[in-house]
Length: 506
Image (cartoon, rainbow, N blue to C red; front, top):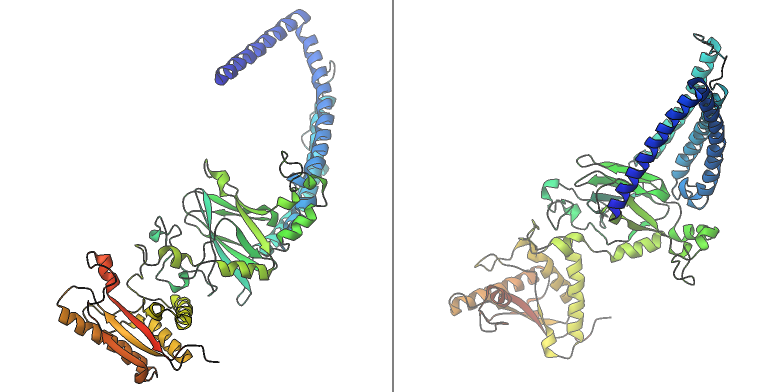
């Protein structure tokens, strides 16, 4: 129905315009062509003067009214160290182009009025004026030279890459329909390699998990954090269409182009809290954030920096907005410490994991060592006999053999550390199998595996008198041997604290 009304209105306007044209033709025939031309010229000249005044007045008023919102003055001044350079260049460009705009606008409509058609007046034609040509060639050339030189200086300073040995943090921003996937380096401070051919539903960034630098990389949730005063280098890439990495409050704007990595370096100079305190000085930011809740928080209290996409990348373009928190270094470190490795939490052990055949990776060793130490401490302090038995979850043997795999050393070294922490502790190492094969062979295999663990401990300085090795074959299953998963549970190596470790040594 709405579309029909719009169509009818368009048809009606067209009819009115056609009728006005016909009335004008009839008027010209009645009054005469020359008189009609004179009247039209008079009114066009007067309307040009009116438009000149009204339009200039409107430009000045609107520029003043919206300078804080549209032009970055007032509360929206730059929050990055390089932003002042760009703002200064913008102001210089606005100054010269503003002069040209005003003069051109006045000349255009004043000339339309001054040289309107009048009877008995003839136009004067001249080929050229040397002085005039010098002026309109020299002045623009000088102004353009000034702007270009200032622009090149600004470009060289703003777009300079980080220098070797410089203290900075590097992150990666992957634009895709319709979100930003932001990747932080892990504790090693380095982003791992990526290859678009490795992109999957889980590994949307195409990270190469054979590269150890990828193992500790972090992909946080919706809220992003960066430390104030520290240089940030952003790798900018796109997966599908053209996006634009846009941080308006920091004067950061760079296209994310599929197949062509770009970058931007900036240093945040104001925390979110500091920027909010500046906003509270302005009346418009002391209005309620939610007009329906006049007693609720003010606009300045709810302000956040944002990361947006400045390209029309599709219908869901609006949803690419991300909140960015600029905080002191200590607060950033606290937030960063809570972030978990994307690889360890989302990929490890799954189909996309190229390292799934490895029991333990170097990055997992300290995490598992801490958990192992805490479990031993709980077992030592527990009065419940069942709590004294702990599984060695991360050791493995070659198939059908008692030979320990290379990556089993991490778990066994944790056991060595526990034995050294509790020097009086005596343990039994027990080997278990599932019911596949002959029971006698299973018992021998489990005994050999328990003995292999004992031998490893003694080679690391643990007295053989503190360790007993027993193989139980398939006689003590944890679950029925009816599924591959249950049989895997029954194939295990455990140790039981027999005594000598009732309390931690001083």
